[in-house]
Length: 160
Image (cartoon, rainbow, N blue to C red; front, side, top):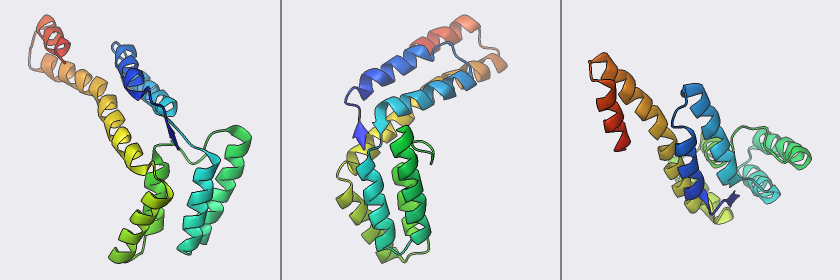
């Protein structure tokens, strides 16, 4: 997993680009932001396959093998967003496991993916940034519904 070190500048550009967009356009820009910040590597699949096999999740290992082949050919994941890679891996490995085993799985994921903690922190930050345009749209809509003047709303939103 690679994290673009310029994620702060990319996040700022996202906020600028999404300023006058509707929800669908914001969603598209947000997806692009995620793919510009996070990228998978072949070794991510290899480690995921190894962990799946270690915990006897054969179907999961086969799914990652298939996606690894797809990734090698197309240079992107067919499993969905890169941001979901760790979440899905963790969830699928922990499913139907006892609490102690779930903790062990989390520790092994952190060991096999040393970038996991940084990824988790950057991911939380990026998700928060992605919500800002939606919040502005909601403030504008709700403000108009209670009769706040458009200029007052723009002044308010300018402070965010």
